[in-house]
Each structure stands twice: as C-alpha cells, then as structure tokens.
Image (cartoon, rainbow, N blue to C red):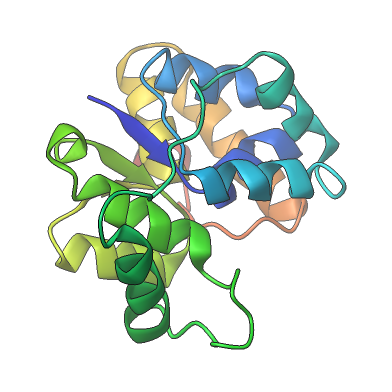
Length: 176
C-alpha cells in the first residue's frame, strides 16, 4: 500500500518530535503531490522539525498533476468540492492535487493521510481510502511498535501544541 500524506499529519508528528513513528508507519511507501512538498517546505518556518522529512528524503520526487486535463481537474475539485477561493489559488491545493493523483490507475489503492476533517469526509465519500493521525497511532499500537499509553500521550502533546486532529480519543484504550 502507498501513502499520500497531507501536510496536517506530517505537521502533527513533527510538532511533538515524533516523526520517527510516522516514518516507521509510512516506511518506503510514501508519495507526495508537488503542492504538498511545497507546503512542507513553507511550513518549516512554523514547524522546524519538518526539515527532517526533507533532509532525509522520506519521499521520492514529488508527483505533479501534469497529465492531460489534470490541472483543470485539480482546480475544479479545489473550487467545487473544497470551496477554494478562486482568488487564493493555493487554498486546498494539496488535497485537491492529491485527490486527482490518486485517481490515476497506479495510485488507486493508495491511502490519503489527513487530519483535515472536511477533506477526510469528502475523500472517503468519493471512494478514496483515508486515514488520520489516530489511525496511524492505532496501527502502530497494533504492530506493538508503541503502547496505547504512548499513543494517547502523543495525541495529548499534539493537542497541547495546538495541532488540529480530526478526532480526539478520550483514553489510551481507544488505541487498542
């Protein structure tokens, strides 16, 4: 399985110094859209730990939505489904570009990682496999890579760092 992360999930783990866990989860199966790569570069100003993803080249070269009609589809998706402002061309660009890329035959079985609640809901209703930060942590608990207490602690730390999670577990048991 391939993973297409949104900047939100990358920032959540980076903000609490837990990129090692996300890297284990993604392994060498991560891909990113060109706009997500650009967002990560820009976000290093606010979340410096993101630089680790760039320095360690977690992902192969980013993928551009540059096949026939893809740019038009990205813009349409961004404006119609994500309610992106036509005057703000980068608004929701990452989610939109990722969606279009994931409709390519070679990426149809991939999973979109996001904590953007609207993007998660929309993609799931459009048949895209989706997961969020809590799903990542739950899988790491299932693999015995971390404990449910560690997963819960990471979520609390993300919340304390003002990171937006799609959902907030109330106890460590919710990761089991």
